[in-house]
Length: 73
Image (cartoon, rainbow, N blue to C red; front, side, top):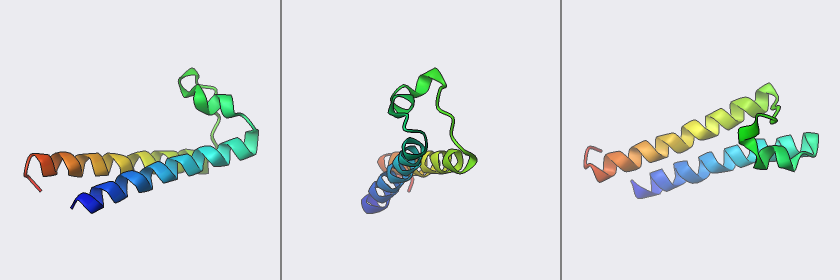
């Protein structure tokens, strides 16, 4: 099960990084990605969906890892 959690974490991170790289190629705004808390990141709907999907995949990996630690899964 360790392979599944690592795969989900890496896959989720790759999806999020892909959405950010798509944004950087489109806008040439690296600072917007680095300072994401300032709300200057104007993602398209596809970039936004990819970002959220990647975060959900990573969250799934974290939840599975916690369940493994608690011996519930």
